[in-house]
Image: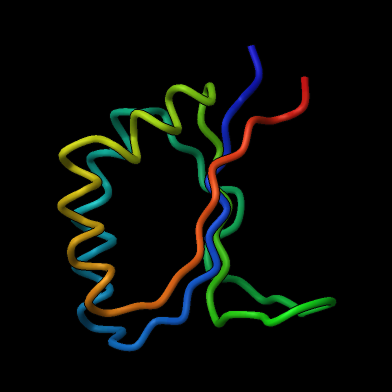
Length: 96
């Protein structure tokens, strides 16, 4: 079964409140087997517009990635995130 990945590019407008998003999202990530592969580290834009924070999260499957996003826990976190950050995010299925 192919893994699923969240790929997010984020500009954080309020770093203190963004910590609330991270704390609120944590239970959803734990419950759905998330593994952070990249999380706000050093980056270099090669093409297109870059954002200040880039995140790649691996899940055991595409369905687990979708279930995490749609979970009540993550939706509560998202409600915080959209007030403190601008983001683009996609969920993709990994290559087998």
